[in-house]
Image (cartoon, rainbow, N blue to C red; front, side, top):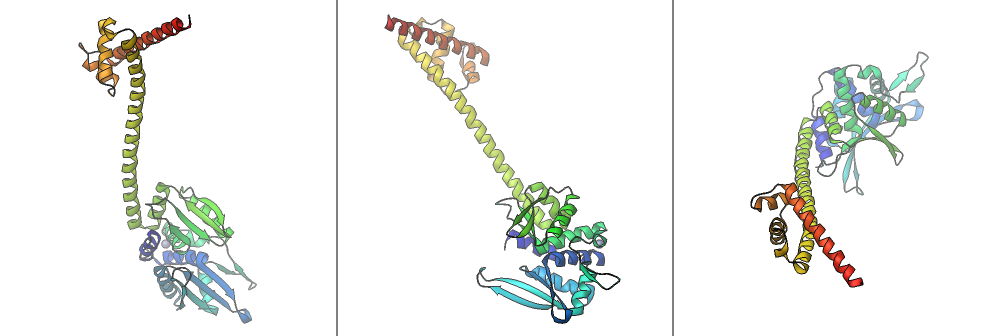
Length: 322
Ligand SMILES: [Zn+2]
């Protein structure tokens, strides 16, 4: 089972708070996953398809509870898609029209003209409880979520551009930074940030999915922090080693061309310690001196050694050329 189908199974098991919410959820599912067909003699047909069995069961039960209609169920097996099933629910004629009108999708004018609404029916989402149910239905019909171990990505795939724009505006009211893109003739709304996905899961009432995602986020955070600490430590160590190797080079030059015994005692002592302890920091080096010296004191002495080595090199180069 994928994270996405687990989430849908959880959502499809939530008992709607009341009839208004059942209708809002069904309206979202039918708006996104439904197809209206016109048959001979102006007869209408409504089909709702889903690859998720729990969603199909949910739609069947909502049709029954809200409109007292029994949809015809067909299961289509796709040999190409690894034997995945698609569940198709069909309503015919008056039953189809009855459900579509009830969901606010089909509108009849006083003259008897029929229109199809391609945006979110406002009267259906006027209550807070219903808005949550609507988002849940939208996810059941057109949503998917990537396994958060791999990436943070939640999306809605929608067939209708007007409906996509309407859902985008609707979700923006929840401070969700939804992005839109078109893909293979469909309109995709998606979220990429962990925080935003958590907000949406909570809005829909997918609490198990939310907890699973939060646990993964915590584990990822711990891993990232450890990596940051390791990265930071090795960068500092590299800096120490780079500086140390320059100092050692200078001190070795002095030893070979001038003699460490000829150095003033304070410089000689730090020079010998640096040669013996190449990986330690200036602070640690200072603590080894007798009496101990602070970091800047050690730095000052090492700089003087480097300057001396530089002067000795220049002198010998000058000597070579003359
Ligand atoms: Zn409600």
